[in-house]
Length: 245
Length: 197
Image 1 (spheres, each protein chain N blue to C red):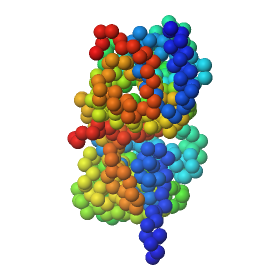
Image 2 (image 1 turned 90 degrees about the vertical axis):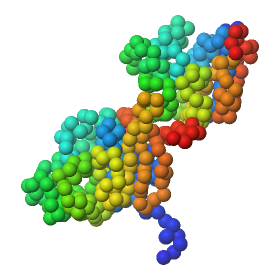
Image 3 (image 1 turned 180 degrees about the vertical axis):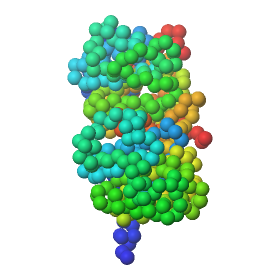
Image 4 (image 1 turned 60 degrees about the horizontal axis):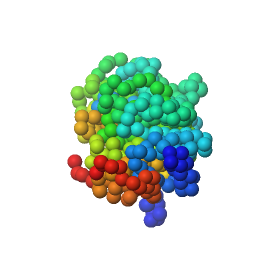
């Protein structure tokens, strides 16, 4: 292998979110499965949805699998993006599926997944991604899928199977997780972790974003303040004022 | 005198051009003349949109003042950092974005960025009024960092960034920070305001 090849970074999927692409040095390496994790109200779903909308505007097919909320409710809670083209929803470039029908398709009837059904669910996701030419996947929320799994091995199998599905489809995936602690199994198996949170300053909360892990690319590990707007997720560095907290 | 101040401010900005950060060191006696010079003599005449960051007085008060000065306000957009703090001054306004607290400096940067994207304007005038009032709520190191990030961002967009600094009200550290991060410091009123330190 040549030195140039060793140095070369993997082909990236530019998220289209200016600030995030800047942090990631251009985007998320294609085939990566990235965990977007943080407490409620930190902007995870908005970030993930913008990722899909930005992709759709470039002609990249996107799929959102919603596990808790109905598609209507999920979208109604996101700022109305100025750049969202309804055409992309109508023509299927941007598709939103509920978990139930996917589970049915996989022949899974039980609420708690075992190893076999986890693998079948992964197979179904892969088939859906490949057959529809999906290049961007969002699973929101992934943690609700894990709630029903007591066995850590099953959770690991499910994550690895979804990761393999994303890779096989040459897709890029975001798994949205409600956990404020990304050190669980999902953080270990994921190729990247985007940590969303709140920074308290004198009683006021600033929404923050920090990429703590991203395989296949060099990236900033600094904390940034974000704003969820109709122009998308806007990003600026967290000011430190020369002090150390 | 007052006509001259407004005209002088506008001419100076015209001469300096975009993508240059300017601190206007003003006296309180010329405050409204400077504001009119920026918003009317400069921005309105050039057909520029103006983003006015107000941390001294609520945007509603500033808007009334501008109307009294007969300034056309339709292209002026406020980022209001103070109304939430002084309860009872928040009213609906389509040209105003409110920030909870003047300590949330990053949100000021983000709201200015938002307006810049929303208005699709590069060469807009962005006025920070004033650095002295922001200094009441923030330590100067934080403020210096804020100015550096804000001004760099605005300069890269081809905007006209202007910081209003009231002469005699800035501590030496703040003056140093302004001198460090601004490309030009323009004294508009060189005479110190009597009774002020």
